[in-house]
Image 1 (cartoon, chains in turn red, orange):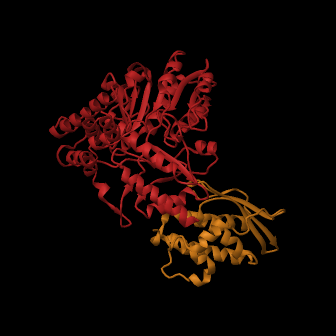
Image 2 (cartoon, chains in turn cyan, red):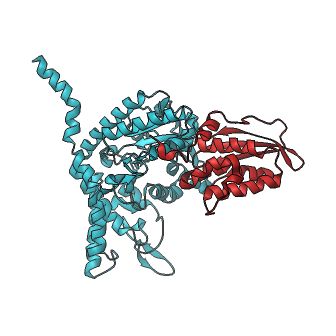
Image 3 (cartoon, one colour):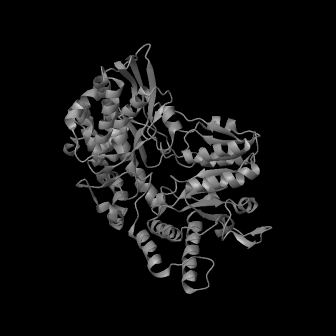
Length: 423
Length: 150
């Protein structure tokens, strides 16, 4: 009996590892077999952009080879086919994040444009001089600068909720910053520089108690966990396709239908109108009101293929696998003398940001690159986070579902070696 | 393990990174200019003491990667005693060496600075090596606005 229990306990950590179809997944990503400077590629820059599976690459080239034309306007067969593929991708996105309707899914260029859309459309209509927008100290520049532009345009004030040294939002201070002037809360679901997953459920509940809408910047969170916008009850959710194993150039703004209906258009042009005269134009209905001009058709179709691919694996399985990868990487990194992890939140996604004593992150990046290891070195578009920790930059290894423990071992051996070289 | 990086990270560079020369403030400096690389966060302040047209003393403060630290450290050593014009000429040669536009390089003319020639193969790192020299260029032209590589 005791032997059986022991066996069970011993084999448990491996069970998830082996049931997760890692070899099959790796084989689906052709770039993973590239050699970099003669070495096997170890791609750990996934928080910047993920690599693409064959399913996505093929969906894009198939569209161009067989079904491509402009969408929505043509009566000819190809236009109908392209429109069907484009709109079915919208349905896939809707189901993937559990939105209520396709009308709530706006295709944009990326999370950045999604946030700018909210700032310029919702913001300019609803946020006036002296009104406040509340963000956190761990935001990416794309969830800071659009609000600063709004400040220049309308005088809306940016309020910043602080973080602690572990890289967690100090919730009480956040809650204390909610005021009668707060018109919007805009926070990262997960931090790109620290990996922190914010307590968005509490944030949304507290904001809604004061009738304040909440925008979640989901660029980092969406590839790592199941996102259910209805369960979260967020008002806006922004994410990029390229971080979700889809192509660059496409992203999504989810918005609650009633909010989107009431918002003025973001850009004017074709497709977003119903009728145009020189005196006045009548705008199209949702979601087209916010989709002026020809969109990135093939990339939208590619994003739909990425979602199909992820659904087949399952976001919960991905989250569990990546959680084990992060635990392993954190444990191994902890054994390296002189390595300091930046971002040690209790709830964290698969990002390991770190600094080494006396070795600049850019030197780390170049040295690891010579071993075929791609990490990011820099401020990660989160300069205020770097200032908070008093570092000019960090090195960041960010993991995806196709990474392995063996790759983490290669990374750790690389770090140990470069520490020796720098002496 | 890092054999192929030997051209980039030569021992001289490690040496200057570990023990930067002229890493101090010159009190009463005639020229003082900040240099900044926003991409990697490298920051330095360059100080010059001039005697007429001659650079009498040069020093720096700041933090950066090994390449940028070694570059500014080597630069402060080599420009001491030079006229402003000689330093500017050397900047041009250095710039040509690091950006690799000249097929034939007179590395001898660059003396010790030749250890930085390896950055040519690493486009992402060229600015690390040239930040010091762009800052010097601004100092010699008596500009006071901070220098940025971007």
